[in-house]
Amino acid sequence: MGLFVSLSVIALVALVDEHCDPNSCEYAIAVAGGLVVPSETKSKWPMKAGKSSLSTGLERAVLTQAWADDLDVETTYLQWKSLKPASERALRMMARSH
Image (cartoon, rainbow, N blue to C red; front, side):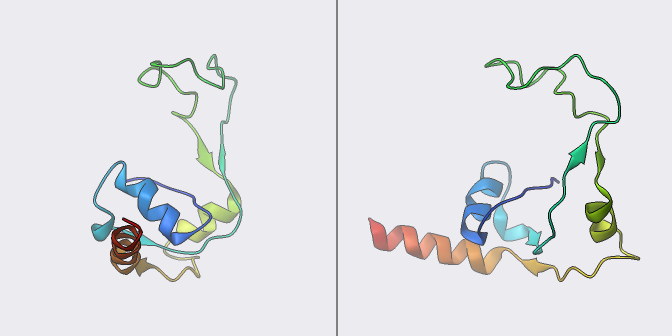
């Protein structure tokens, strides 16, 4: 499970595909938002290569209010859709380009 942000659905498919099967995922068009680190962290960005398994500084991060509202079942207006059709389109586009 994860939270991914992308400029297009096709780019989202590629991003999600790095970690899991996009055919089993859903997406929604969301408002601008982010993750907030609630306290000082010793982590530095950009991180050094190969250090991603150590503390990222996001372990205690919380969602901004807009994202918290959008991801809460009681307050959301998001319409979740299967990512499978976009994944299939991406595969067809890749097949045509080769």
